Image (cartoon, rainbow, N blue to C red):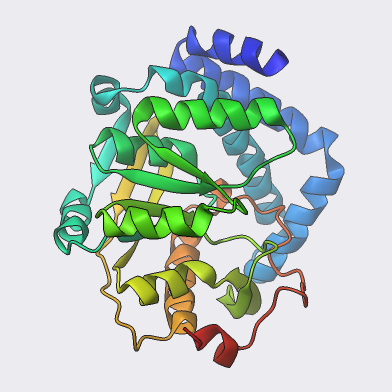
Length: 292
C-alpha cells in the first residue's frame, strides 16, 4: 500500500523534483546504512586500489544519490512515452540495434545495474523493439507487481527467473526475432563461471551466453547513464555467435564491456553488491560450461 501511495505521488510530480527527493533520501541512506556503505567502500577499494579514501567515499556517496534518484523515478516512469522520451532521453547507436534485428535470429542484450536500468528497458521497448526481460522474483510482491505492470505498459514482456516455462519462453522470444534483456554484473544463485572483473576473478552467470551459442543469436551491450539531468542511452555493435563459440569467452567479453562502462561512471554502479563472493555450489568449470 505504501509503495502504491509513493508511486501515485511521484507520478504526479515534476521529474526534477522527484529526483531531488531521491537524492536526499539517498544521502540519508549513506549515513543510516553503514553495512551497505562499508561493503560498497570495500568493493570499490578492490576495483580502484590507487584511489584515495576520500575519492572512494565521495564516489560511494554519489552512488547512494544516484540509486535514490533511480528508485524515485520508478513511480514516475508511468509518464514515459515516445513524446516524453524525446524530452528526457538521448539515444546513441540506434543503428546497432537495427543491425542486430536485421540478422533475424533474435538478440540477447546485456547491461548492468548501472544508472536506471528500468528506464533503459522502457526506452528500448518504447522505440518499438520487442523486449523480453528476465526478472528476479522478490519477496515484496507489491514491488514485483509494480515492475511487471510498468513493463507491460511500455510493451515489455517479463519472464520470472526460475519459472518452469522460462527457458522455453526465452527460446520462443529468439525464434520470433525478439530481444532478450539480461543483467549479468551480479553474483547470483545460477550456473556461473569466473571471469576477470576489475582484475579479480568474479562469478558471472553463464546461462545467457550458452543460450546465445545454442541459438546462434547475436549478443550486444547497451547502457544508460545520468548526465546533466538527462538519461543517455547507448546501444553498442552486435556480435554474431556460432555453435562453435565458447560461452566463457563471450561472458568474459561482455563483462569487460560492462567494466569499461562502470569505469566511465563509477558513481552509478551498485557497489554494495557482493560481486566477488564465492558460491562453490553454483560455480562450473570452463569445460562443463562449454557443453551444449
